[in-house]
Length: 181
Figure 1 (spheres, rainbow, N blue to C red):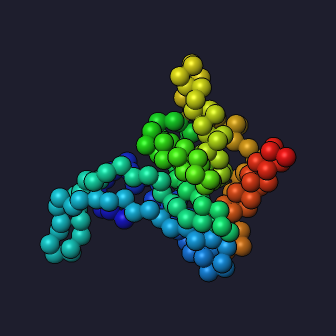
Figure 2 (tube, rainbow, N blue to C red; figure 1 turned 30 degrees about the vertical axis):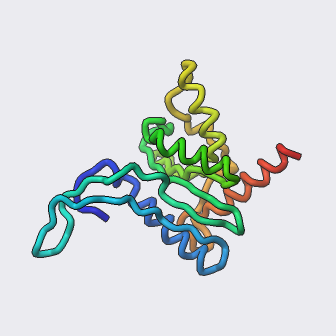
């Protein structure tokens, strides 16, 4: 991780927990999901320690993680909030566009949201996020309230996985299929 002070590294601990979970999933043959690196250009390097002390992001990143779960392409982003809601300001337009395009290609896109205030995590499917986000232009909320997160999509630490999101993803996919049938 970088040593500079930037808002872009706020979710670093959550991302590390997800990375450890993804390694466990890989070892068990459940999924192959990897962290998408954000390209940076160093502008200052401490020559003694060979550590980057200042850098800038080369381009906008897409999402934090991408991979495949039992043949299903997935992409997702990890977000943390200290509030009792998820502000849309935490999610960038280029991420929304990427996820929209990803789902059009048959993939499943979602967010993993850590509500620090409640010490709870949730899987937020992209379609649910998008239905809230579209309402902003028509005077709707500029956030999704904690109470609007489906409790059945809560993510727990279990079976050695710090962020065992596959259970919540499976629940979402079953619900999604039952709506189609």
